[in-house]
Image 1 (tube, rainbow, N blue to C red):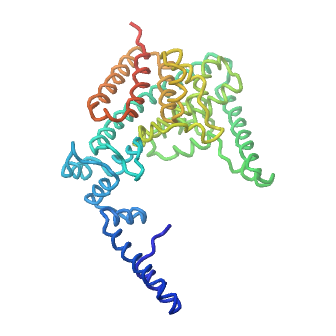
Image 2 (cartoon, rainbow, N blue to C red):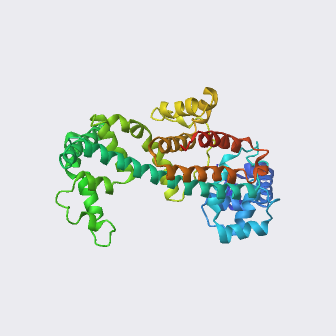
Image 3 (cartoon, helix red, strand yellow):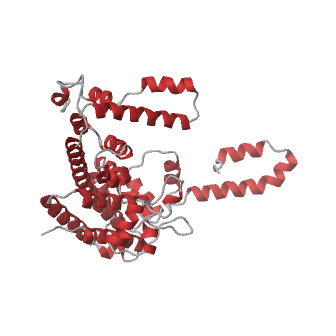
Amino acid sequence: MKRASTEELLKFKQTLSPLKRIEAKDEVAATVENLLIVSKEPGFNLVEKTKLKEKLSVEEQIEYLKFKGITFNSYNESLAKEILTDRTYYYKVTAFRKNFNKDKDNKYTNVEFSILNDLATIDMHFRYLFLKLSLDIEHNIKSLIIRLITESDEDGFEIIDEYKLFELESYRQKLITKELTLEVIENKIKKYETIDKKLLEAFKSQRDYSYDLIVKRKNKPSIWVLIELMSYGQLCFFIKFYVQKKKYKYKELKLADSLLFDSKNIRDSSAHSRPIIFNIVGPNQFLISNEKRIKLQVRNYLTQNCNMSDSNTNILLRNLKTHDITALLYLHDYYVKGRISRVERKKELVSLIKRCRLKKSFYEEHSEFGEIMYILIKLVRNYKVKP
């Protein structure tokens, strides 16, 4: 509810009849007095500014954090100001407060600014490593698809026409679920750009790095060219086509069909520098809608390969990010076979755990971070490198 201003209260007093003015005089005066007291409360003006989405100076950002219960004992306010001014920015650090609980007064308890800053640094390491894992997965799956198509009797051009029909029919079914008229659906279908047109349009300029790859093939590109140009999301959809149509040795791509889109969420956050371990302890996120379900392959990977109990697995995987991180590591473990790549990634995964535990004393009163570490350690221990 919006708080009435002093002027609004006095104006309301003027509208009362003489008798009612006398009766309400003390009440209005008391309300005005309380309003003035509240307005002097530390952080009140900052709360109003945040509600109005107004810009806060770095000093005000620190004051607002203090108002919300964030403390500055390990890192003093001068150091915090330096961090928020020269090394990072407010949202990048404060997003991680969502990993911690609040008290009955809606204030965070036992949460230091140093903890938030440490989580922001750890998150950076997560993003850098997860992007590498994603690139490895994308390269190896594309290589697998190329190999399967090359070994099969598939024509490198006819399979594109078949895929385009699959695209159009999938788009049509999506439009039908929106209960549009037949005329609207047909008009949208006519305007729909299939993958060959999308990719050729995307790289039509000589300034595009892939221009030379397609300039001689723009009239009729082969599947090998399109696979090379496909984005992570487009690759997910092509794999769905390949598996549903039961193409040559399609079972080798069934895991990718099931989990690659889940890993895309982590890949996109990593590539665009968006926080990953923000709200990573939020439970029951898979109960938001019927479309969100724990993937059986992910659950089995933790229980059968990583020796996690059913109870822990069922609880931890209900967080979307925990689920998707597990999917990413499972895909990498399954599809990336090169020994050099696995040796390097294993080293980096171990280094990530060491960095997470570098300042473990910060988290002694916060078991939430321990849950993240528990599942990560299990995943890394299971990631083997053959001698």
